[in-house]
Length: 245
Image (cartoon, rainbow, N blue to C red; front, side, top):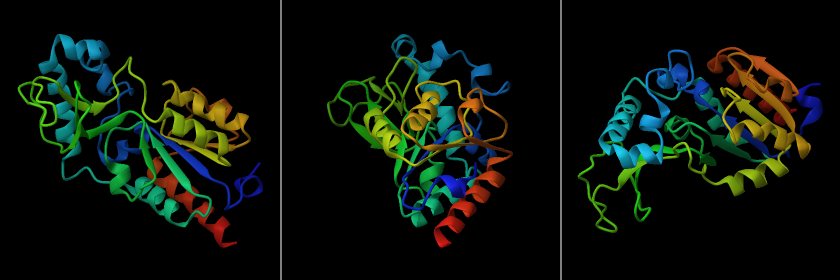
């Protein structure tokens, strides 16, 4: 099978990205052997129960992540930029769904973008849901400007036990796309790990781009492996050649 034989420029594309695409920009991944979950217990920093029990610890954990994301050296890499360019030239349309909570896709030029696990650069009131931007520290003493509640401000991220965002829109896109591409994901986090099967059920051609085979590699019709900054731009170049042919 080849890309050219299985899709046409009029086919909508859905792309799923995970931590592997941002690693080369200097951001720590969560699931690598030396990643964030090797140093912190999920139940201590990434659940609603943890926030209720010890909000200072939870906010401190995410404040460190925010500071890292705001580092001047953390910039969109060639993979982010290639996906931003793809959105600009692909006639069938591109929906980018990311599990990442960083802002590198937006800074790389992607606009039709769903952050299914939320956005670290935003702050949300746990009481009224009001959402505000900014990557400064969140403190427990902060008051919500919308409802006046104190101690309710939290990172706009999806914690374990909470429902990922915009699942209806994602499901509709998976049901109508002609190409599904998974980039830099481990293949063991649901519901995202099930997207490839859903897309294939509806007839999409499926491609995995990853540093190495994921747990779900056998579900894809094609796999390409290596650093994201190398294989993603090459893949996007092939799609551009398809449009120009």
